[in-house]
Every structure is written in structure tokens, then in C-alpha cells.
Length: 316
Image 1 (cartoon, one colour):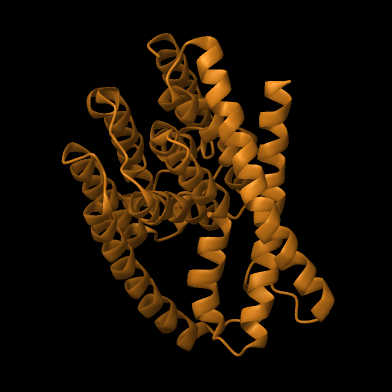
Image 2: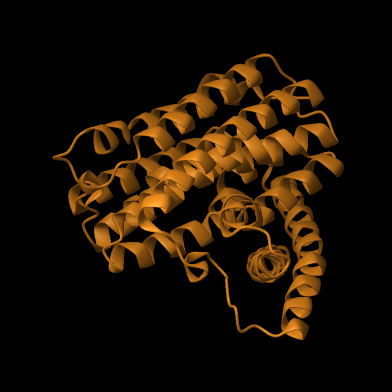
């Protein structure tokens, strides 16, 4: 029953997050907020809402290891699993797209996050530093997007969840269902995850690194799989890099303002370095013009992730 409850909580989280994004995007556009700001803020924060709610709920309920494990595990899964599986399905022509600046921000954010963990436990001061870094990233992205749109233009329809024809009652329903569903789903998932950890005699951090991290990475996996099928390597790679930046800077930044987040010694000696190593694995695909994510690379990344999960469970 506890596994069913965890799955139910995860499903509610993901559905509520999607509804919230759709409702919030269309409200923002109708209020006259520029499409650029909507895409950089409303969509970005909205798609990270499930992870954010889970992390906040975990901190409030005295299971901060679940929050930290969720973020570190999600970032590792985003690279090894979320890029690995789609590459097996279809070759990702990453050499054709320039993601160097976004990737540099991801690596810088990862290093700042690791430094904060070594200076932990994570608290309000760490959170403010991480959120300040996020503001710098958003500012830079806004300037780059403005330059791009001046030269190429952009339609509202390009924004995830945008629907100019959506009726007011439907927008309101999406917002209400999203706002109500997110805390309910987070509560169910966190309670179930803590109970599973207790039953199997493992730490909340292990459950966060595995069950919760994989579950909350499902939207990214679905998006990246569709991008691979449609031959949209820029969407696949950009989705992973953007998600990782938000996980590190926004989710932990906000969660650490809610309460103290102790850092398990295992993170300092193993998990943080696996996350960094996985992030650095992308460097050849970002900085070279002749290397694509082929099926062989996909099998390698997915295999590395399977090995990592086994090691986490065995040592948990």
C-alpha cells in the first residue's frame, strides 16, 4: 500500500504541476506580461514545482535528506538517464547547437552548490547566495533571448502551455487544481518515501537519490524522449541543462530558507562528485562540433546510471 501511495502522490504532483504551468502561463500572458518573462520565470518555476514542493515538504516534516537527495539525484538522473535513454532511441545531433553559455552556468552553479554543501548545514545564508546566482543566470538568459528575438522573432505559441484560445473558466480550473494538487501530492509522496526508508532500513537521503529523484525526473524524460523522436537535440539538451540549473539554485535556494538542511557525509564523499562527474561528461558534446550523442553513448550513460543506483542502494 505504501508503494501505491507513493506512486499516487507522484502522479498527482506531475499532473498538478502541468496544470499549474498551463494556467499560470495563460494568466500571465492575458495580464500583458511579456512572453519572454513568462518563458524565463513562470514556465521555468512551474515545471520545477513538483521538485520544489517535495523539497519544502521534506524540510518541514523533518526529512531534509530527502530534499537534498531529490535535487542531487535528479541532476544525476537528468544527464545519465534522461539523455541516455533518448539517445538509445534516436541519435541526438548535439554538435549542431550552441549550448556553451548555458552549460557554463550549469557547471558554475554545480560548483557553488558543492561549496555550499561543504560549508553546511544549508541555511538561509546559503539559500540567498544560491538565489542570487539564479538571478544572475536569469538576467543573462533574458539578455541573450532578447538579442535572439530581435533577429529572429518569436510567437506566443512557442511558450510551453500557451493557448490564446483558452477560456477563463478553464484557466481558473487549471490554477486551482494545480495549487491544490501540488501540496497534496507532495505530502503523499514525502510521507510514503519516509515510511519506505524506515521499512527497508535505509536513509531518507537514499530514497531521495533514487525513488523520488527518478520519479520527479519523469517529465524531463518524457520531454527529452519526444525531442529525440522529433530530432530536436537542442530541446533535449537545453531541457536537461535548464532543469539542472533550477534544481541547484532555485529549489535548494528556496528550501534552505524554510529550514536547515544537514548534509549527509555520503554526499560530500560520493554523491556530489558523481553529480559533478556526470555534468562534466557533457563537455565534449557541448564544446566540440563533431561529437553527437549516439546510441553507443546512450547505452554508456544509462549503464553508468544503473551502476550508480546499485551503489547507492548497497551502501545506503
